[in-house]
Length: 536
Image (cartoon, rainbow, N blue to C red):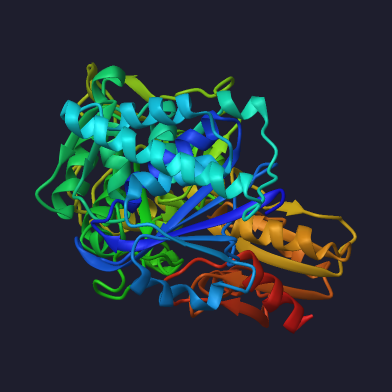
């Protein structure tokens, strides 16, 4: 096992796979190893087949792969689920105790026993002393087994450590969205728990007191959306966190935001639908949902982070963009990003600002005064002398109900005029690879790292990758990138190529070659290579 080792832990819900994942990734990172971890699990409290994949590498690693070098099974009857990913080179070890398994992996990678013991103590610190002692014994037993396998030459691991990794951050997507919200000045979150979005509510609740955040677990998603709108009206900076099925209940509130011209930031972590679908799996199936949600016509913006760093920076940016243009801004993630971990060198906060765009009102203040760019000055109650009048009915510039048809026409076009500013502020897609490409791979959101690694392995100079971290509105240069290629290939984690459809609608460019996946799992690096080679 050289340079990059793929470890898969397999077992039932309730056997402690989550404990192994959280403890083991922290230990390996602390000892200087680059790590990446992701999981796929069934929607049940006990039983089923769950797996955690951990890559340990000599260099930074951020993508999911099919290959399994070491399969560590906590329940031998569950390994059939992984037959297609194993080869004759795969080492299979059966061990039913999760802490023995943790220690065994640490032994294989020559992790110092003191680091293992320290992390085990920290993880079980809230438990009784007997529980801590028993888990330490189990971990040390596994560590000895691991060292014996190495010393007997039955397993050879040659992954290099890097001391710089020890001081790095170990984050998952939920942590990154939460940190981005904090950096964006978020001081209110309302949500109804729904996987895979719940991690953001949990993270912000854990840090609420330190950062002055009001967290509210609402009775339902309708209430969550309306609470967030009330917070923005009062001068707060609110986040709503949900998944597709929960957001379906929020669409009336979304239209309310459009009519009231209130900012709101909505984090939507995608999972396969329709209906309950596969509640613990991943998909990029909700782009059309957030693009067209709500009745009536009003502008919005949609970000789609491709990795943990982007989840931080785009969420931070979402708050300022929503505030500036008084529109809903979406941060569209998925289960894969929410539940994936890797070590991050740093999240730079220099230059990040919380940009408040409300004004101090006077007695003549009109909430919806005409504005060339569509953005009327926004006042908040108690900040100045003006009356902040808003209404869900169509209204006049002062905010009072009206059925004046000329005013209606004027206000509709005033609201839509904001789209010009959003287009001007749109993020340009990132071109990864040489500018003289003949083949252009297009992807958005969390396909990013798998596509990057796939193209790196292929090593072809005629292929480049156009990665979109903002999917609406599209940057004006989009068509220029597409027209330059002899062949364009779209990769999406859905069945209907929703982003390809959006590109055709907005630019007229039809992407004919497509690679799609919709079985509830993320693309692997190997799948993308195979798909590209079959088309090329």
